Image (cartoon, rainbow, N blue to C red; front, side, top):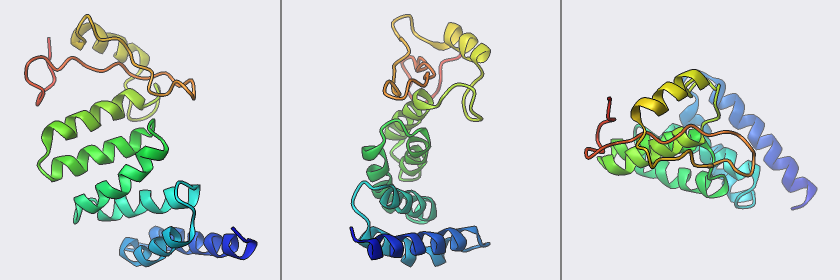
Length: 165
């Protein structure tokens, strides 16, 4: 991409960030984010920025559109716990509850320990001891980054609710 194209994308990204920062500015950012997608290379940081923010904006009103944007983010970074969590919400809003559970499970597995959305190591140990099936082993969804992942809980025979033992 030429320097002028990169400069144009940088200006558009700044405009999008300002629009997103305004109260109720999400809708105003849509044409800017769409323009970034037209100019940025597929899979680039700028394209992923646009896809993620478009998904956030469209999530409640148009979960199907949001899911399409999230698929691009997840394809580029399969260990993105936030994208998996948003995908879970999209699927739940669409009534696809089993798919929502799967997306939430992937989000939990990929969330690094110690972050605000993950259990503490002590809680993870307790949770592991009380809710995991013996065959369940912590999967490494972030093997390339070296971040530890939270083990997948045991769902028992009823995937729509977490087994509490």
